[in-house]
Image (cartoon, rainbow, N blue to C red):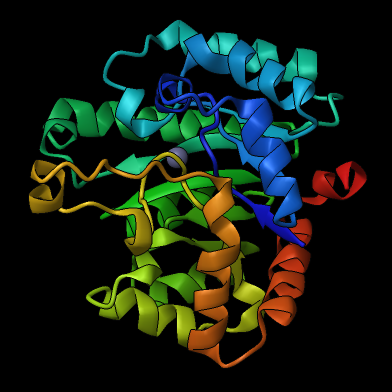
Length: 278
Ligand SMILES: [Zn+2]
């Protein structure tokens, strides 16, 4: 069985294309994807991800995503703290996320926004620690800064999602109780560095994810030329996870079954509340 450790099932792209969450979850279960973790991105979708997780027997996280930090207010952190206190006994609330730092998107790299991102990240790390929740981290050109705050504030581990840093950075996350999330990017031959990393990291260090609806795997991705010729852009969903997992298993020279079991075990280790849901 597979676990999709990162899937934004509340994203509007799904319903706009007739892909209703209940349908996706049911079809995924047939493909042996038994659980999707739905991270929140900002205050306005906390209720949505909680309801989705409960309606469809999945899991969720609460947090403010770095891409949403520019429009977030200070009191969103207070609200988040109250939400955590109120729902901490909810079995389906299994992590704080998605939180982190993005130093890739130019608009997020002005001195003021960098500072605001860092303040939100640090405040959320403290909340996660206080509530003993693992964290789901957005890492983009920010691994060292994320690691620095983790060392200073401490954490209960978690997942560095869509990981694309160096092997050395990856191992520093692992030493702090994290797994690295791998998904659609490994399906592209040109992703040499990520493929190499996915092949060489210890088996215990990796969890699988789709980041749906983003990062479509190569087989559903339509290039600009193909789109102009009428081929629709495929929408990534948990349904793609087994094929992505199989490809990664092949890269590592193990069977898909073995890789599914290994990565599921890893997910249960870094997200301990998941176990009670399976
Ligand atoms: Zn995400």
